[in-house]
Image (cartoon, rainbow, N blue to C red; front, side, top):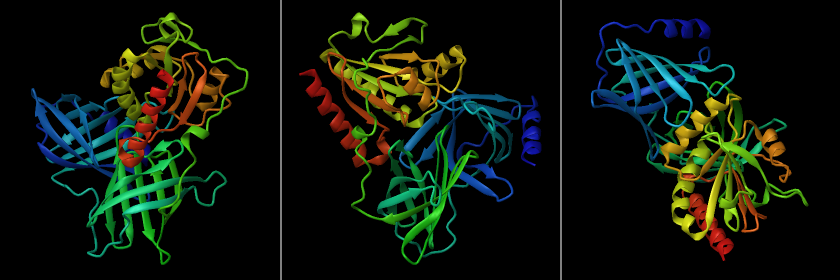
Length: 403
């Protein structure tokens, strides 16, 4: 059924007279499960700049401007910034129908998409009463499975509107937004890579029991219990080094030149090594932060090298994807194309690490290029106080290493 719908939508884009897209607020939905009618909603605004439609997607406090758009007759095509994903839509008065294509996926790349003009509610409340979820929640993802994991839910609430995120040891879930409706909690986020939907109900023990959907690619059960004292492991304690193995690596940069840690440029300098990928939203957040940090600390003898572990073996495509991220945030440091993908291959390419469990992982080297500390995962701006704490610890560490 899904394949038939996608095929129709893909071949029906036409070159008829160009239609005008309504200016203003739209409610978009990604269909994650056709049979169960599970849809992930998000809100976006359409406006015109130099005659071309531009979109702004809203997730909590986040605003994502989408300006790589093209109109062809009654069809709209737009690419998400940074990530290798795109939309192909047929436009009707007050309606869009089409598909979202995630090119970073090897299979099941296509997700049905539709949008209706003038609908401003991400989720529609059904009852007046509501649960209260503001605060900190000890969360278990993958309840009942052998690979369950812990996280921390942090939420604010204004009447029925809920905003927040989940912090995990591999990174945060970025900006989530939704509602508390009766005993139910609904949250969603779409940033071009993440397509997250959370649905939960509060039981008589005041536990949140629910489902987490990551696009059409992942689904797991979760449980959250209010617990202001719960903490995850220290991010500096997770990734270890292999004793006696020197820190060194060589890869090509986005211009095709071979760059090594042992190059003259990095001698007697503190170096931050960022293990990342252009497909990774947490890496995007970290790149935005490191770009500014580099501007502040370059003159103090700090260099940064990003090692990109892309989801493609095509080096030229990998360069293109990484350059989109680099240029988006004006990052002045080197981005190297490793030609590898996945955490296992990342560890193999850097034998001085005992393992790699998350992207990003950030390695801080002293002036002798010895590992001072390794930070696993990332607490981005959606985490509030955790983000502030992360920035303070990073800058204190750099100041110590510079001395």
